[in-house]
Length: 181
Ligand SMILES: CC(C)(COP(=O)(O)OP(=O)(O)OC[C@H]1O[C@@H](n2cnc3c(N)ncnc32)[C@H](O)[C@@H]1OP(=O)(O)O)[C@@H](O)C(=O)NCCC(=O)NCCS
Image 1 (cartoon, rainbow, N blue to C red):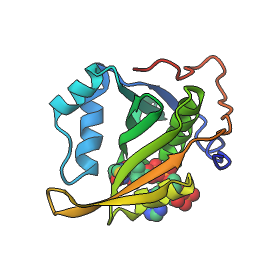
Image 2 (image 1 turned 180 degrees about the vertical axis):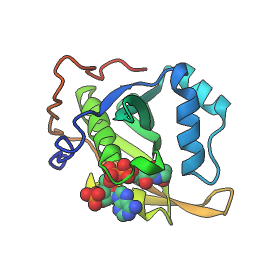
Image 3 (image 1 turned 90 degrees about the vertical axis):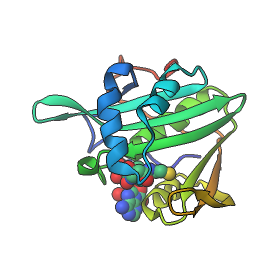
Image 4 (image 1 turned 90 degrees about the horizontal axis):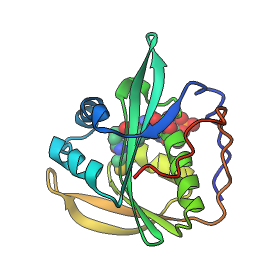
């Protein structure tokens, strides 16, 4: 069971949409600000073309325009999902945006009959681990020295997706998340 979604009241203008090639520059900029060894442009281009890959961006209103504040990329193969990447623009962190993206994603996975979601996280990345703990992801393994830039271990985490609670989005005519591959 997912925890109660307490993000709606603070993020009324948040919109979650499929990522497109037009979003690439903004997504790359978030990626580069977020990781010591960011993905390359061509990795994102491959994801955008890969039919197993699901890509979403979170847009928020900022300075009278809509900006991309975050993105998530995950694969669904048979009844398993792998969350490959989630990152939030540094100046939009701690506002519940990653939480919203994960709520949206996990509800979508549940609707698609996905049984389990997996991800890897750096041992030192306590912010991301707190986020995943909030959703009850459990540590299921360690990949020793997985990250080549500093030989850091990856913690493998998994979440069994049971009957996840549905989220009520304010905008009922908004994107329903069923088809964003
Ligand atoms: C990890 C990350 C995605 C979190 O995004 P965010 O939008 O700031 O997270 P949220 O505001 O939705 O936070 C949700 C919960 O996660 C936890 N959390 C998030 N950032 C945290 C931090 N810096 N320290 C401790 N806990 C944190 C908290 O439990 C938080 O709930 P709270 O604010 O009610 O305490 C963001 O810090 C980021 O982009 N980091 C760089 C990229 C990255 O590490 N991605 C994960 C790769 S595995």
